[in-house]
Length: 124
Image (tube, rainbow, N blue to C red; front, side, top):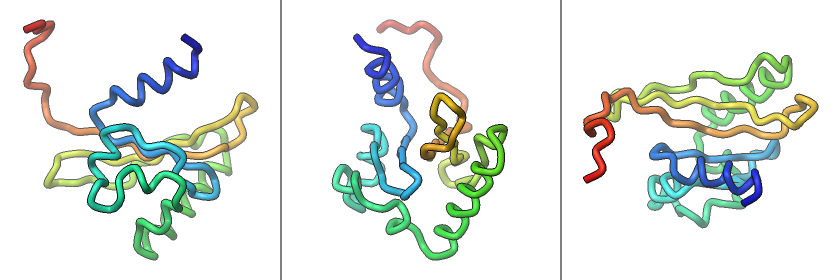
């Protein structure tokens, strides 16, 4: 298996929605959780569309500000964008950089704050 396949598998197994975009805000990839989460807005059909079409004008402006901030410094790589009290989760935008540190895109990452309820090493 090539390294790229390992990375895809990591994203695909994430229980949180992950949406990957290029700098033109085109949705390049959605993991299975994101496809399911955004099903009522198109799910898989959103791939290839503009992320900006999925947000209101204020949010689009904020997304563009984050991209500008990412471009200012290679040290600017993640920013908290939202807390969803109903789902007890944080949402982040994360910079994606090429091997030279140039900004190539970004992704949206959801992280739930709920304590894990599964037993440790429960193989049943």
